[in-house]
Image (cartoon, rainbow, N blue to C red; front, side, top):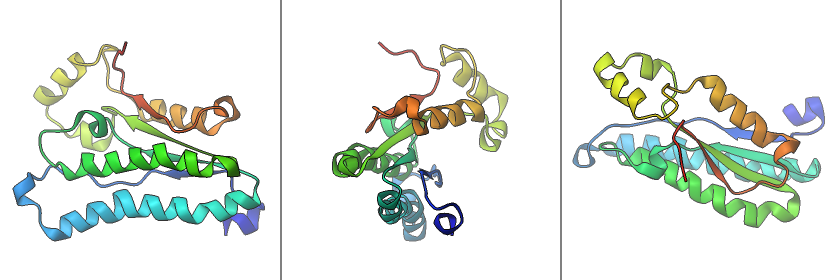
Length: 172
């Protein structure tokens, strides 16, 4: 539909996901399937199916949403970081396969972002999180949107295969 209306597709943003905090031994098959279906299979299938449209448009950009827990892990709910680690693998592999078609692939790995989920956390959980962030604040949805905007733009036309951590942490 988009291709018919606009004559081309430039960008695909795979930004859906379902989290989990279920302990390993408590996972039920239904939850396992739900996480894998949305966090891995949906991203894979959307990426696979957009290639034909990008070829007609002479190139394009695939942007994936990863997570900081794909890098650092989390204390419970191991399938969520595992699924995001799979997205990192896709983000590292697809540029090698799709570069000849002028298709760039990158990901954003958000840190703690001001969302409804974070707003519902108790103060005693939020305050230590903020103290652990050198910038001294939780990220905003705009911080993530701006990172996506940059990677989708021509300013990033020589960047492919990165997982950009947008988490306020200092690195060396």
